[in-house]
Amino acid sequence: QVQLQESGPGLVKPSGTLSLTCAVSGVSISNSHWWSWVRQPPGKGLEWIGEIYRSGSTTYNPSLQSRVTMSVDKSKNQLSLSLSYVTAADTAVYYCAREKKIPVPVFDAWGQGTLVTVSS
Amino acid sequence: DIQLTQSPSFLSASVGDRVTITCRASQGISSFLAWYQQKPGKAPKLLIYAASTLQSGVPSRFSGSGSGTDFTLTISSLQPEDFATYYCQQLNTYPPTFGPGTTVDIK
Image (tube, rainbow over all chains, first blue to last red; front, side, top):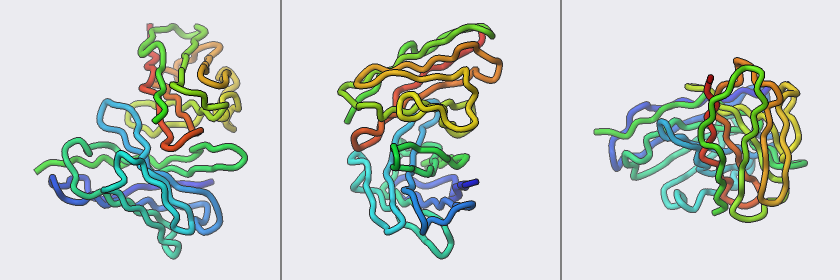
């Protein structure tokens, strides 16, 4: 059974860089699937940040593309998310999720999420 | 981006009620729609994908239907554990987008 666990600093200063990791267990990142990051500001809805494949191929949300970088570390079986030049609007719970595309696209497994607050 | 609207935004219902939530897409998305349940402080949980396919382990009182632009999530007999917020998501076109959510509260 796949499990995902996000981790990283809970507080980031404005104009700084948010960096999170997502540890994956129960399945090897090298073997299959895409992996997405999704965020949710407190009390608000869900926003897709982007996705990454085992090869390192990425697709980002155009609204965040200029500030987002995703990577995979196959040796550690984990994903990474970096978001630069953060503002208070980036305060949110950040989730990683497994994304299957075959036979149909679906986000079938999610981490528990980690809250990141942007504040000085 | 494809916009998703959900109605109602909020509904109060009683245990045993039949509940229907609708999701409308700003353009056709075939059947590439999923439904999630989210409880406070928890991650979204997949209920339905491909508009009408029940995720493994999800109770059969949940069902989904629709294609194109109009979709529905139905809970046939509301249970105490079903009080939560429900989101639809389209996966037809990048970027994937979510509806604003429907909160189901206890009447």
